[in-house]
Image (cartoon, rainbow, N blue to C red; front, side, top):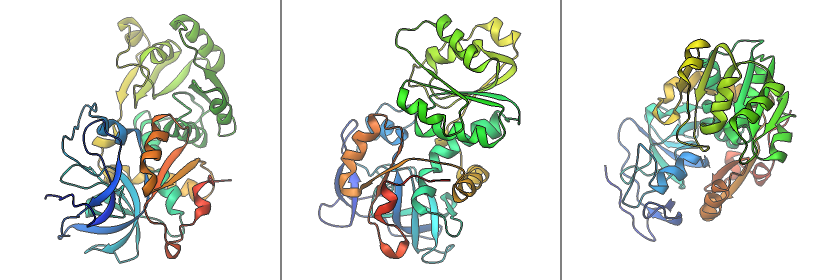
Length: 351
């Protein structure tokens, strides 16, 4: 399956011309739909750190030398499909490449196996916003760490979209104490209204011993560590783990390596694991997405959303690269008959 980039023809789409380049608005011709695929009109397409990492050329699992349309997830309306009725709203995942245009476009062609119908009445923008980020919070906490009611949870990297959702998932799942850790003081304070019982601000140049002491004061021995940072913060977090604590890593902005003392690992009988949504099929995310979408529909999960029209994709890119503490979502072509309005662009979910 090949894709031709033809200026002034085809559908409007964001295009990354080479590794490290900022996306521009251009045109792309979609492949002809075949059996087993569905053509969508894209309604809302979240921008994820993964999209920026792949486009930068530094991601460990993918690098694209030729121009391509990025975008790894969206909510869209079905236009043509053998499985879904026209007009049906679906959540979609996409592994964008030069041969497979991503979803930062007005339309997308997606494998039927990478689609899930949305529950009736669910806000499509919020449904998209909690997709990748929500599953990256829910699956590590609930399915991998098997968080139990009454346990204590430490969330490293709690101020980003994934971390904020992790705090809320832990709280809503009955954790006895949830402590958020991050660098942005204002964003940390907002966590106290989302279910965090305490927060710990990371300080530049602080030693492991000092951070460990502050974590112990805030959290005490913890049963589960949700690690979105790695590096030094994880080294300190390991020291405040209770016996048989479970640690799940989902990212490493604080460093690509961390020291794990063998005696601590064995002495506390810790379980260390990792989660990567890119390598997890959508069918294995169904339970997580169902829980998240139900929580959003009931107003139990809050997520701040910043939306950008497709023509401002470069601005969205820059906003995401600056750690916005919110979910950046691209609206390719808002349409009143699909219940997408400007009010969704600045209004977070509310209780």
